[in-house]
Length: 119
Image (cartoon, helix red, strand yellow):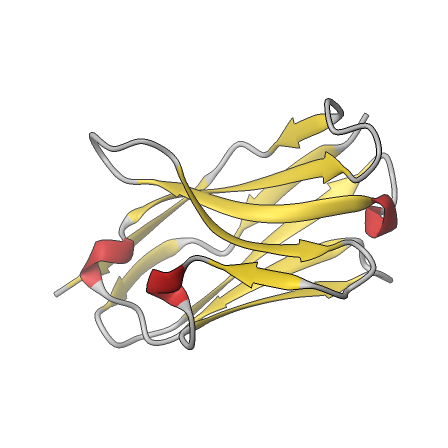
C-alpha cells in the first residue's frame, strides 16, 4: 500500500510559478512510476508529467514542455512538479499517481491539490 499526499497548490497570477509536492509513505518510490495528472472543471482528468521512481526517464504532455519540470528526491520519497510560467489554463486540481512498474494494477492516487491561475 502507498499513501500519497499532495501539497503546494494555491492561487497565483499568470506568469508566476508554483512547486507541487507528492510525498509517499508505505513503500519506496524506486519501483514505481510517479505521474501528475490534472482535472479542470467540466473536463476529464489529463496526464501532465511522469518520472521513473529511480529518477530516470521523464515524460511530459506537449502543452507543458519547457515550462514544467518533474523531479524526485528518493531520500524524502517525494516527487515535485515545478511549474513556471503558469498560464490561466493550468487552473485545475492536480493529482499525483504512483503505479508499480511490474504489477501495474498496484495503482495509487493522492487526494489532489487545487491550483488557480488568475489572468
